Image (tube, rainbow, N blue to C red; front, side, top):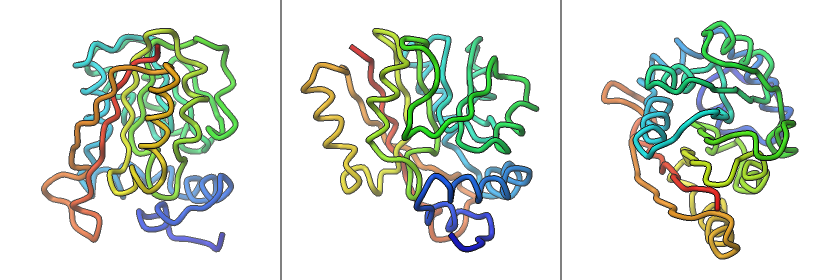
Length: 211
């Protein structure tokens, strides 16, 4: 990957895990202000709120935790034990400064999260299942670390839910009896003050339980 200025377009253009590591290493220190605040980024709060309102409980794995924005929201809503996993060590360094996580796990989701099977009662993710990031192939790997009846609250960019195979994967998981009670409410990704070509983008929050 050629050198990219850290921004949303560069993030949407990522192609490999190494690309992600390079971009987010450069973006980590300024991400909260240059992206989340300036674009009125809503997904961390939405994913956390959907999880809690659906009856989610800890311990929770925050997948693609980044700088810890979703972990902060989970903590505000009373979730006591949250671990963070992300491919970027630099993003996890920023997340650690927020003092909301029990453990920080640097991991490439396509290879799985290196924790014991059945570790978590909940799995939450905001902004990871989007353009240029990971696809539905990691969902079975996340199910491995979730306990029976664990609640998932995963934001998925609505623009590629069908085209990137998420719909097919969920149909397969339901058919295999791996998950149940799938719901897909849709929310705006950015607030009213957002600008730019992606300001009206939406996300589906995939809410379901492991069977």
